[in-house]
Image (cartoon, rainbow, N blue to C red; front, side, top):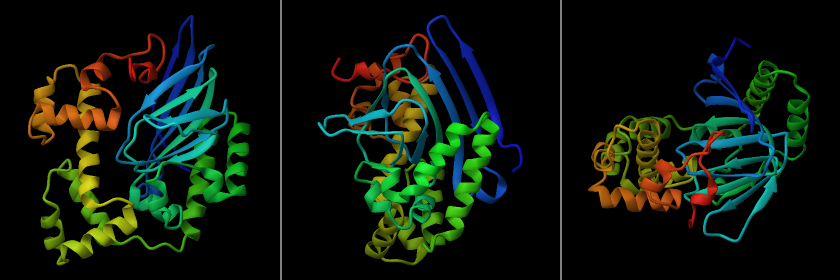
Length: 291
């Protein structure tokens, strides 16, 4: 595999140690997988993070402490090392006891449907344990990742595994749905759904049915998710944007509309979220929920 590393960051502090490595898939997988991340953390204490929904399907391959995942507002929870986060719309509280080792894979939704052999609808219902999708292959992959001595080895292992899974899948990805998803992303979710159907020469009903079969959610729900992802990115990556500017830039009718949507997807207001930080770790502290 060609060198896929895009960036690498190492931070050491008196309280915690973490390392994060981000890499791009090789050319033959780049149209399916968006990003690989290798993350390790020795916090020396229990950690709880708030994870908001994204416009990608996320595969977590853990080989440290088991993670406890609780959807915000639900009493249900699962404990797992390897799982898939689909296009559900609930934020998650993710906890571990202090040691985390994981590979994270970002997948385009229609690519996840192919990788998991048509399980897109199942993935929108919440967290799915990878063993329920890949049985013994999931255990084998996690075991091999835990034996890897470097992030280069782990990325290469993931690359080979995904290539084999995609090659063996009998699920067809429709080019029309890929095109529609790309149009939604290019417009930040701000394009009339009917316009996409008309450009494809399809009826609204046929477009919605085909889209949901491959993506797991309706085009309207996808547009809403993409719009939130863009707003979340602006909120977290820049302090120069006022909430009213983010609302306007991302196509919300006003700041109140943006705040309601953000609260739905993140479980808190954008102001609370923007101010929340760990002093020594990556991510957003989970204790801001109902604080």
